[in-house]
Image (cartoon, rainbow, N blue to C red; front, side, top):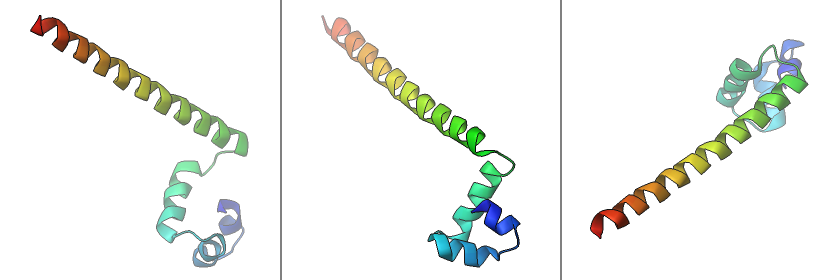
Length: 74
């Protein structure tokens, strides 16, 4: 989509053709402009891994908090 717009197609036409809003297009342009497809794929993979690790950390912190509450009541 970014390449279509860079090739000279109007932004509104590109967005309408792909079914996205112009705001979404410009957000993606700010994030992915200048990246190759492999770079964008690596970024997506790292973001997914980061999200998974944050979830694991939150769950372990919740477990620790629950255990502290149990030990504190005894």
